[in-house]
Image 1: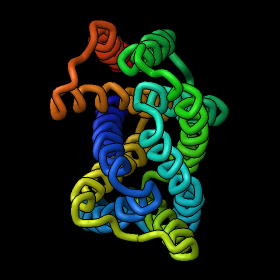
Image 2: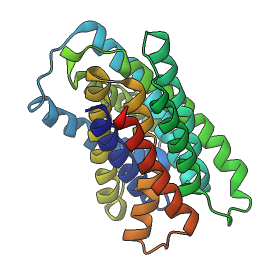
Image 3: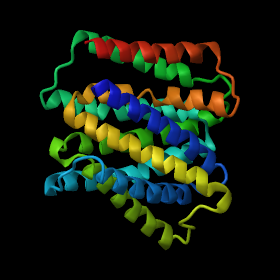
Image 4: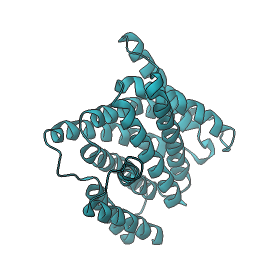
Length: 275
């Protein structure tokens, strides 16, 4: 089941990045993220009515701590996507964000089976391959900087969520989105930045927020009920989803190494599932 939840997380984050990246090219990153988080909080409220979830002080506190970092992670991510390219930002953010929950899993007693380790390595190689583009130019340095910042913040946020109990269900995910929204809403207000995306961008930002909220809920539930490492690494294949959506929805052809990279991601996930 860890693999299934990880795949749901990967698809959700990949779709969220795709739509969020589109929105930030036509609006400020902070405005887009606030709009995303509004739709994310509303989506989380719906999930609370569907998924059995018990309100607990410790789990909600961990969700709140995750929320303090995830808002800035999203800002860094979409700031980088708007000024660089997903080929640089997404794989680095995926790699860095994956390390934190894996380290947490090992430290708290998790065991990495040899087949899982092989799957992790193949999957991470696939992430880089499916996102690489030779036509990067000066976007490399900017993309590396924001990808590193986003990955570190995302990794911290995921680690907090990984420590929640199974009984809490999706409460930590909802708390994360709520706290993130509160912090960035205040930041946008004090800086005089619009807090709601305009008509031409709003629908895209809302779609990004819904996919993102569903993805985080999938990560939380998967980490609570299974292997944190498998959920984190499987979820880290989201750049492959972003690349595939760009090819399908925007008619951007995939290069041969990107196809090979997606195949490597699938192979890595299959190996982890077989362990």
